Length: 88
Image (tube, rainbow, N blue to C red; front, top):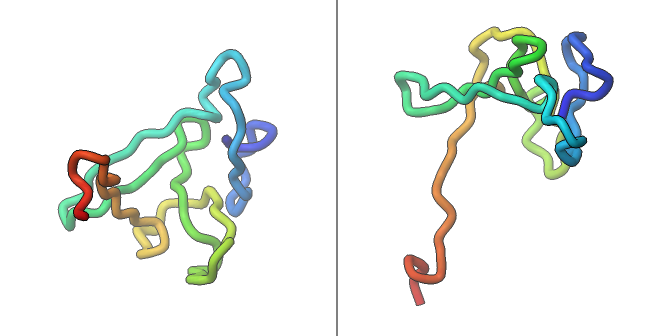
């Protein structure tokens, strides 16, 4: 969710329930890029999701920002193992 419908770069995103309407500030376009990574773009602001300041620390802030095609704006999406596919 983008708090207060912000369009300001570096606004920290937060987890929020669907608020009864699932507004555009809670909608995202996920695009597979040629290198196999994904870009996540806000329907509302047109900005992309990135890790603030390129941090690799646990608990780093996730923010929206202007698309610069930086590595911090690229995401790898992998399937989560299920009970039927997990190794013993």
